Amino acid sequence: MTSRWVVETAPRKSVPVRWRAYSVDIKNENVEITEEHRSSERAGRVALRVVEAVWAEHGDAPIGRLYTEIGNRFHLQDDLTLDAVAAALESTGLGPNFMAAADDEKWDAEIRGSMTEAIAQVGDEVGVPIMVFSDGSRKAGISGPIMSPSVTGEPALALWDNVVGLAWNPNVFELKRSRTTGPIL
Image (spheres, rainbow, N blue to C red):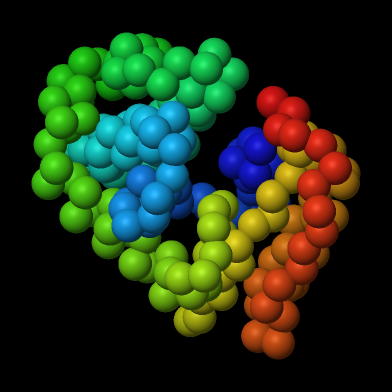
């Protein structure tokens, strides 16, 4: 939901977006979780390997579209298969050649590098999403916002300003409240 908010809001704020990889499977490598949860996390890691391979060849340009297409299949169609990743590649015009990356563990190093950059901004005690803002001379990161459903329209723009303001304030560490609803996709 946060990614949908970013997709809607960043262009309206004239903010460039660089999508980066963060694997919950890698983060939870040494954590005991259910096999169902682990399977879902593994699907994410496999998809991120493909995303990293695309990024290595094409740079940032297609990543937002690819991320959206994979997310639609994973979250809206509940399809965590390699076929879903292949269909996302096809729908973005990238073709099937990148699917070889799905089984190639070398891309895990790229994912870990991306995660290290994010953790450097927010610390290791947070979850995703992570947003990092840069004004050229400095960076500030924040975990969140977690929302459901995604905020749209004018409230989305106001939320953007608030999140950016909180991120730049070094004295703010956490805001949180209990969830009152499950994911509304």
